Amino acid sequence: MNYQQQSLAGMNGVELIVALYDGMIRFLHQAIQAIEANDVSARRIAIKRTFDILMHLQSRLRMDIGGSSAKALAEFYAAIFALCIEGSRLASVERLREAIRCVRDVREAWHVAAQDPEVVKLLNTGQLAPEITVPSHAVLTAGGEAVSSSWSA
Image 1 (spheres, rainbow, N blue to C red):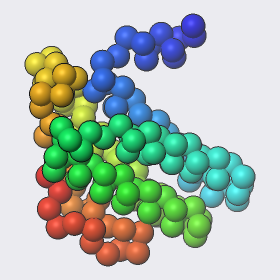
Image 2: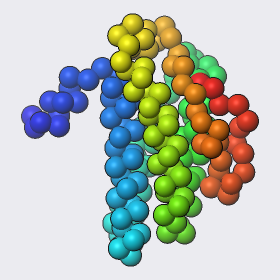
Image 3: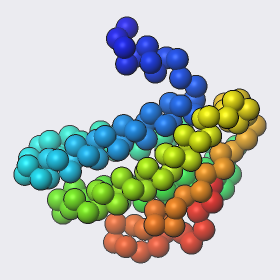
């Protein structure tokens, strides 16, 4: 087992979510670097890795427990997916930076939740849906149209 695997093995569920958000941010930065270097292959690989994380997070949402919070996160993931598609298709650094800003904002809410042991316990047992406020600028599709007017998870 390498260092990264050992580090992940010691994390609780909320810390793992934060790590996945960190991974998305890292891959989006790699996609930006690839655009700036005019490296189409590297851009596609970085965007695919971002999509892999988004799909994993989406597939783990519990609509039966999370209710409106899970729905808000599903919409958020869809909006980030759309920003990434457009950012990659147009080789738009600005669209990918917007995705990074949105992911960072929600990541920070998960990070705060991860610091409270009682919240972590309730989240991990499904007794509490996360109280995450998705920023209003994160509700835009790649075309700039609003997906939802209220995003309180």
